[in-house]
Length: 143
Image 1: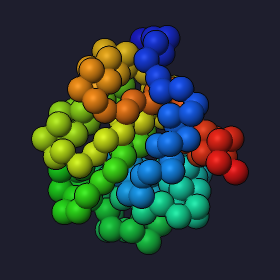
Image 2: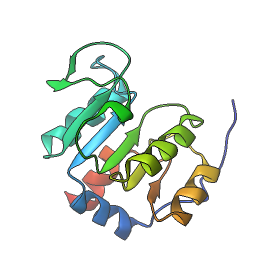
Image 3: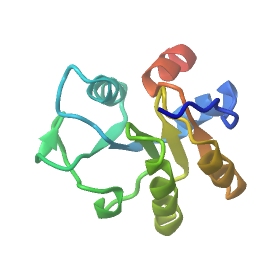
């Protein structure tokens, strides 16, 4: 296992602005299993008014929302990616963000760190958060 200290992150005030501005959140790695953190976080985000977009390799619906196999497949605008995948996948997500043009925030969940991708994302004008739980941060900053 490779451990990396998160050197790149948005400050709390910027995280608050992210939550105030985003409406649609794609969640790569959103599990249909209710006991998984990804499911709990997505359920919470949906309950506070965000549209969630499950990105998962199987199934038709999670939390009542249509499941897409990849972020590239989603036929409408996305504001943020909230990733529950391994750190190496962050590079793929950043490439998707560059191609699509609508996604402005890449969020890597608690325990997921990729400073190289974070530095590149920030240098290209994207917002980047890593090693933080979006549910915990939202509760702490907006509730």
